Amino acid sequence: MRRLTLIQSSVAATVLCFSAAWAQQDSQSTGPATPIQPLSPWTDSSGGQQPRPAAVDASLTQNGAPSGTAAQAQPDTHLLSSAETLGLGSLRGRRHMFDPALQFSEFSETGLVPGRATAVSNLGGSLDMSQQRGRYNLTMAYKGADIFYQPSYYGLHHAPYDDFSISPEVFLGRWTLRLRETALYSWQSSFGGLFTGGPAHAVQSGLLSSIQPSLAPNGTIQTGLARQLNNTVLGEADYSFGRRTTLTVVGSYGLLHFLDPGYINSQSIVGRVGYDYALSAANSVSLSYDFNRTSFGGAGYRMQTDLVQMSLGRKITGRLAFQLGAGPQVLRLENVGSATRQLSWNASSAVTYNLSRTGYSLSYFRGVTAGSGVFFGSKSETITGTANHKFTPFWSASVNGGYALNDSLVPAGIFASRFDNWFAFASLNRQMGRHIHWSLSYGFQRQTSGAGSCPVLSCGLPGSQSFRQFGANLQWHPLLVRAR
View 1 (cartoon, rainbow, N blue to C red):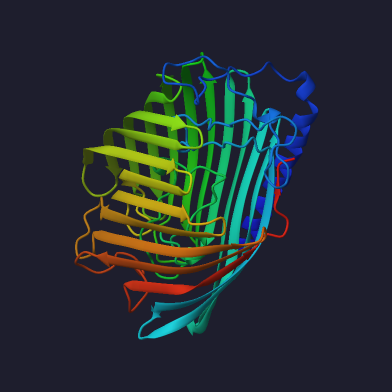
View 2: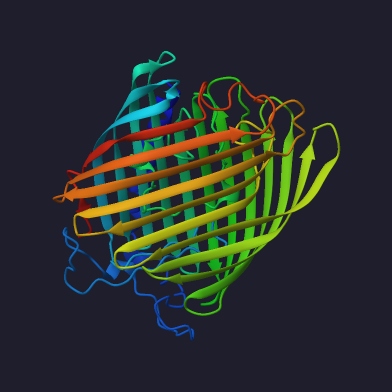
């Protein structure tokens, strides 16, 4: 019932956003003045003053070729202080994209049931959608499936998951307004993807940039099989004083809630104020302040952090997106039995680099998180990376992996106070015509802990710390429509 309610809410939000998009389209003739154009990211580093071409001037036919005038580059509009990481933008002036897909996977997995392999079938689908109408953009991404086990895993025959994100944007003169909601319903943490599609869905949709780790609930510790909802809602307002300076205000609410007892629920409220300055067309710096207050359900514990961060970034449309930020962080813990105030440092970095046939991405985060449902707050370090290469127009390969370390902030006593979690995936992909995508994949995931017993009901699946998965995935995209 809870899963159905989540899906119904997501559909309702989509309908409302579509209504707003059509209303915005109808009012373009009387809309506000053209927004202030930032420094063009494809000029040289001398800070040329070429205006950014409007995305609405470019269009593509269904096969991706320009229709009418030549398609123009569409730069990423995120700032260093934004709630989301910097992106590559697009070298195509894509206005509309609608891509539903059905997918079926069949895997053999070891580690679920000690001493034997389990057949895992994954049946589901996805939807990627992007609409650009004048000053209004709407992007949505969904993936979900039922995962079936044979034989059953301790009486569990199937474990569904749903991963939904929606992001409307509005450009009004000097203002840029963004909303974002991301919701994941699953039986396990999404880190590594073992219970959220495995290698077939390990890489997120490229339509939406990642939310910065300090603004969203962190789930990097494996638990037992327990239904959980990880939800983030955020809003962002950017005000441009000129072509170089922008003020950013961000507010977010994050929730990690377990629908089965035995784990630690958390709710986080985060506020951010940032100031961005463009050094040139490609390079920028920013100074930001974050306030985070997290409460833990049923325990009375609360955690508060204050973070000041200096960041630098570089963007080249379609080629490079790089950002690096670091700064001091003050931590306060309430109702943990003793006065606790700590001074530490926070760091985050992300880089995406594309060549003609090869792409790379790498991200790193170090800071205080809510504890992934296992700790009352933790010091976390996370690093993830991906690489892909296109051998021919039809054959490609990709690898991705990650590592997460979590140390408890609250004295653990006889319980384990540290968890290490890492994973690695590899896939060989084949495009068959325009609508069929086929792949072979292999995945590995392992979690270890320090001395002591698990502080919650279960830390990982019983009987095994390592999981291996090998199999095939088939995707069918029947109605791929790219901009008119």
